[in-house]
Image (cartoon, rainbow, N blue to C red; front, side, top):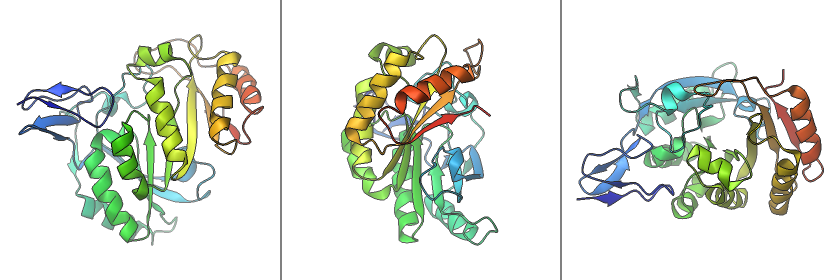
Length: 276
């Protein structure tokens, strides 16, 4: 029996046993489920600023985990080894209870730990795993952070947000054509930012790719739109370095500073990323 995945706007229609475009969800018995549930490819304790979150418990550390798969196809992906992988990716199986217990134990480590950040690949394709773990983390008073591309439908997002304390959301560009290049939808990401900003702490990141999304006018439009939600929304404008399928020169630091100046006309907190 074919089934349609409800999690993201790709709405993959899948035959029994077929993986979706993200490679992390699969039709199992007529229902699309999280095929990478608990399959962890990367674990680290990171400074919260690395997410990047500069206005959420600054100076703290957080247990960061990732799986495999993504529902976009960015040719410049920094973590393509896992985000562009499928079930063949080397994993360890970690249940929600085990992950929550590890997070609790790390609160006693010298650097401390405030919770869990779901990151590295696209965490929201692992929707059920994130939800189940987040419930356990909140029972222990630990924070739930999601670093996401924002490609999720409003209904599942709204159901998850009460369990989320902070999000960093990629707003990869501010033109529909740019998102088409990446296999996504600008409107979906905008709605994710709107909904999340009303429910939890949100910071936004835009990676600047030379010749693709680096115009001053586009950045001013993006910043003005974000300010319409709240001028307090922090924006990270990050420098591109060649990765995966996209070659070329890194974004000039002068361009990043120019775009930061443009964005700061509308937003109170604008940060240059990957410049040092």
